[in-house]
Amino acid sequence: MAEEIVVERFTPPPRDANDPPPPSSALIPKRTLVLRLGRKLQPWVNDLIVRQSKIGNDPFPDQRHFPWIRMLEENAEVIRTEARAALGDLNAVPSLAEVSPDHRRIAPAGKWRSLFLVGYGYRHEGNCAACPKTAALVARVPGLNSAFFSVLVPGTHLPPHTGVTKAFLTSHLGIEVPREAEMCRMRVVNKVVHWERDKVLLFDDCFEHEVLNETDETRVVLLVQVKRPVRLWGRIVGGLFLWGVKRSRFVQEARRGVQNWKPDA
Image (cartoon, rainbow, N blue to C red):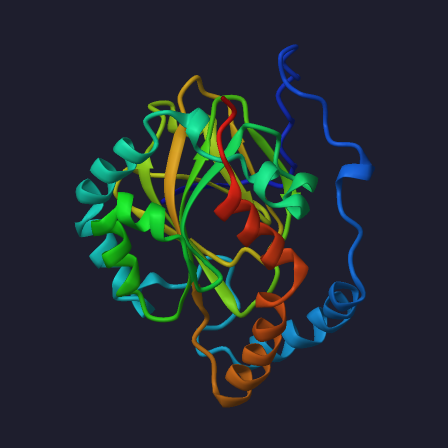
């Protein structure tokens, strides 16, 4: 994982004339009462999870705590072969902004695409059948929450944002990494990191982060999200919070969107 110290946020690339306009506020769903309550509980839950964490609260946790990382890295070529077949036609891969209304706040239409194998514990049987070896590998990851191929086309900027809960950690396995690696990067708090082919980058997405692909190549990673190792009360409270998140409109709308999405004719 190459990294450098930085304090400034990224400068977004100029908008392309062919890019669709940003979504109006009318297209971004209002948060339900349950989601608003979850937002109020979130800081308290996150604070408890941090205090119960077995691995501290670093933006980049020590990867030695997670033996499954080596398993993914050792099978990167197998995963890449399936990814290339499944992602051959990006127009047949859903844009996250299309299938998950809540992601419209940060996901440029058509530029951040995702092929889900597992989302919040829900398997996408069709995609798993298309990538059987990858699906079998991620099924062996302890505490798996989600696994999907995350695709950033050239010129994509994901503005600063944070994840849902400290109960999760996020990993990226570099599948297709642009040759100009320093031009395709992610800032997490005050560090900029670059993906490496066949290597896993592990981070806590509850820290502010943003992503920028200024190359003319597409970046593909296998994103695997897992539960943070915590002590008893962290497991109990975090588990209850996740139970609510999994049944929230945020997850259920995205689940239906992924299942029902069809490419334009």
